[in-house]
Length: 489
Image (cartoon, rainbow, N blue to C red; front, side, top):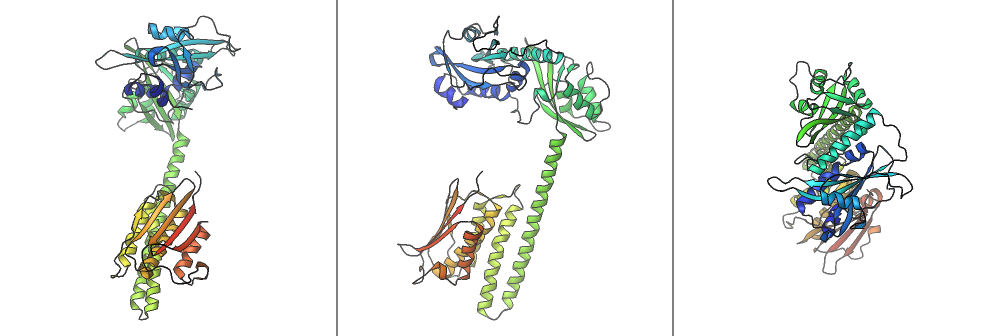
């Protein structure tokens, strides 16, 4: 399905500022759809204003939908939808007198012109919202439904006046309260004129024993949440409905999220809506995850420290050995332990079990260059990007690269040594090549007695379920290719 941005760019004369306004509207118009119990379709004028194109659509979560199929991208000729034409030409909200039965169910239609306020200039009309209400389950509305509909009417008027969405407001979070979570309606003085059952339940959990209706929400909320502590100014602003903001309040182990939507109609503030959501369980889980993440990072940090201690002991033992072969074997063990320690050190700073492997690879390359013999004096070079890898791949891959680089520097004596990373969605291909002495005559990986190569093969084929090939280069030297499957998602 084409995006709003694509449709606006291809089919309309709207500019970048207009598009930003429409994005802000669409990011928050679920509120209008839910309060209206209605579907919303955003129609923008086609180039030349000879018709309309549907650029966005929203279904209500509080009532039955009218449009079971997506209509974004649909085009309507001028005159085909007279309510849209009227709202655009007369710059006013238009309502259909009688329900439309053309779809087999009664549908009440209404159109709302979308206006963008321009500071210091004349306001611009950008599009028209078609609001369609399925009346098939119509009945005598309850107090809650009447409050919803009145609030929806006020919001629609704000859209037509260019006062909604709120200019300069921070983007609405995905987890912001919705209409069904809990709703309070306030008058101009900040007193509650209506409280939905869910909203009242949330305040009961905060410790409220009296009724909310008639109470000044800011004072009531502050009394529940603060005793000797200074009152949070954001709380008073949100709870009084004076600004379009969000905050959270906590009392007695219950955490409630508040979002205020000031209702400004005809140039004056007539009241506000306050959406309420009990986020106690959500915040508890978030805190548990933060604690778990901190514990995992601390474990990685301690493993790294222990590995460094092991490496230091091996290095100390190597210095005491008089046998060159034994000293060389211990030094190789130090490098292997060091490559694992690098991964754990990186994981100790990562919020999840994923690491930026480019940083690890660069440190492995530097370590390999430092221990190469003076006559070689080559530092491996990275080409391409490994990207973010899970730790289950990062640790064996770091060890395999350490072995391959060390083997090339010790036995190939190259002038150039490169590692080329080529990731795709499914696989990571790593090519390690050098221009050194090349492979010995009659080399066969299956019969090779090199401990380093056997370690690499075990890591790549055993732990990573990948493929390993080692071949001579036509230009001289050796080329090693690792092909590693990546987990989906």
